[in-house]
Image 1: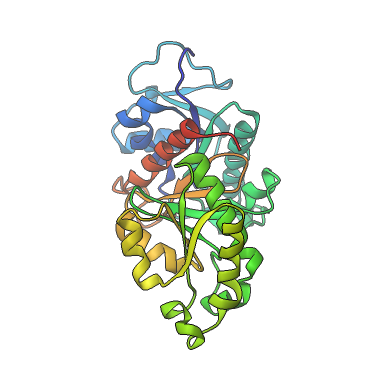
Image 2: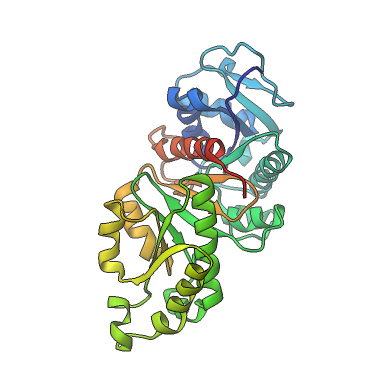
Length: 337
């Protein structure tokens, strides 16, 4: 195909959830097709069902195997690389099975392989059901840990991003009571360094990184905790010694005002809700989950399978669209490590 538009692998996600139906409007969006060529990695039957849900014909779906679509692409053509042929019983809405969980594993693995080989420029993932993944014998908490293993990555960071705010997390899905014990100078420093390197590579050179405190009022001189003095400040100082434009520890109750005003390019947060509450306040529909630290570009929707909406054709495709667009923009902006 004679084009400079990057291929983006779009994994179908859980066939029993909203993944297929949010992919259809996302990959056919004029803004998406203008900047990249999405290729769905998934199941033809599930995608044909999603097409019907949107009043579109299955003739719009073109199977490819070598990622070399024809020079002339008919308007509305949707490319799919078929990896599974699931039975109707394995695609019942809100009822994931062992087979559907194994299918999800295959989609993610194939997309990662295509990225690692350079056949596609990035991957954007639709939501999955972690229980189904585990049911099929793939014991991973989610996409991130699986992709880390597939790409041989030891250190990675979850970032949630929108045009106005980007937040990176030191700890992710852990009980709040465990967060203080999970923080260390090394962990905070690693998060700062990966965030700086990735934001510099994919979004803006020499980013300004704000690092949050753990405790109210940045610990109030030790009155509310000493993690700022013992852990976070030393990590920031070391990052600055290594050339990173990092500052803090900032009090979380005021910092986001300045970040959203444009004073910072990314915010390093100590725990999940510290970063995701402001992010989703601003970017509930268009936020994108980005895995930093991988040797490939991976973006995702920032929501789940939404079984209560599956099959109704009412789920928003905005986050899926933004995940694909963000992947394409990252691929275009990428600078050498």
